[in-house]
Image (cartoon, rainbow, N blue to C red):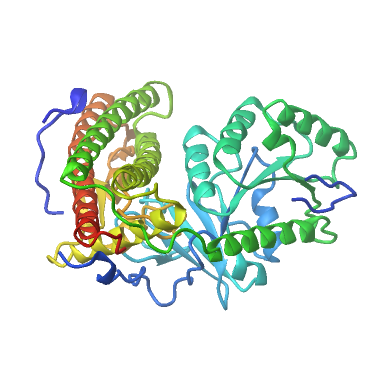
Length: 504
C-alpha cells in the first residue's frame, strides 16, 4: 500500500477560587482475563509514581518564573535544573534525587550523569526530580521546557498532558501583557481542559501589577467565559518573603480532591442487555476499524510531509545541519503525542458506536469504562505470544528506523511519564532520534584547520529517507494497534451476543 509522497521501501535493521491580595474569582469471557502489571520496568531507586492523572502542567510566557514558582510550591531550595529541551517532572520521594529518561534507553539514568563522552549527546526527553514535599504526595508538577516560551510543539504537548492530568497553571510575568500566541493557546486550552488557573509572578518587583492583572483579564475575557472566570493568583517568589504561594498550593490540592472524588462516583446501569441479532455488529466494527485506520495513516503521511518542510526551512535559514536533530526530534515528539491522542479518541468512538448499536440502551460512562477495561485486558491477554508490542521507534544514523521493545523503552520517549490513561486500551506511539543521529551532523575538526561543516545536501537526503522510513514503520505500528482493538472488541461483543448481556 502506498503512503503518498513519503513512500519508501522498508529497510530491515537489527537494531476556584482562592483569595490572594484580596482578589477572588470564581473466546472466554473478557472480564475474566488477567490485566497487565504497571510499569515494573523502572529501577527501584527511581522516583515512585503517583496516580496517573494527579499532575499539573506549569507553562507560561517567556522568563515568567515557572521554575522558581515550582520551587516555591514544593519548598525546594536547590538551584535551577539545566535540562535543555527536557520536560522536568517533580514527584514525591523520600530523598532528593533526579533521573534522566533518554530515548533509546530502557532505564533512567542519574541526572546529571558524569560521562567521559565529549561533544553532543542524545538529550533526555524527560527529567524526573524526587523531592520530599507534602504537596507532591498529592500532585506532581510538570515544568515545560526552556525559558518559558510556548512554541507550537511545546504548546501541543502541554495541552495534551494537561487534558489527561489535573489541569494547567499558566504563569505570567507582571511586567508584560499576554501575547497573541499565548491567547491563542489559552483559547484552545479553554476548549479542552476542565481546570485552568493563572499565576502572576514578580509582583514585588512591579508596583503597577494590579493594572497589568486587569489588562490581562480583559484580554482573556474577549476569548470566552471560561478564561474570563479562571482564578488568578498574584505571587511574590522572593525567598525571604513569598506571598500568595500558600493559596496556590491549596488550589492544587483542591484540584486533586475534585479528581479523586470524580473517580469514586458510582452510577450507570447494573446490567446492559443485548438487543441486536445477527452479524450486523461485526460488519459495523470492521467498517469502523478500517476507516479509522486508513484515516490515521493518512494523517501521519500529511504530518510527516509538514515536518519535512519545517526541517528543510531550518536547514536553509536556521543553524543548519547541527540543529537538524533537535528540530526533527521535537517534531517527532509532537507527532507521537498527536497520533497517540487520536488512538484514544478512535478507541472511545468505536466502542460507543458498536456497543450503542448492540445494546438495548446507549452505553453511559460507566458501561463505556467497563468495556474499555475489558478491552485492555483482552489486548494484554493476546500478548502471550512472546512479542512485546510496547515498542519505541528510533531514527538511526543510516536514516533507518530501529525498534526498541519494552515498556521502559516507550516510557523513555514520554514527556510526562504518567503511564497509561484510565480507560486507555492501546499502547501509545513513540518516535525519536537515537544518540548517533545527534552527533553525526556536528562540525568535524580536521587536523590543523577550521571545523568542517556537514554538507546540507547530505542532510536533506538523510532527512527525506528517514521520514520515509518513519512513515512505513508508523504505518505498521498503527495497523497493529487497530487490529488489536478490533480483536478485543470482537471478543467482548461476541460474548455479549452469546449470553444476551454485557459481561465486561
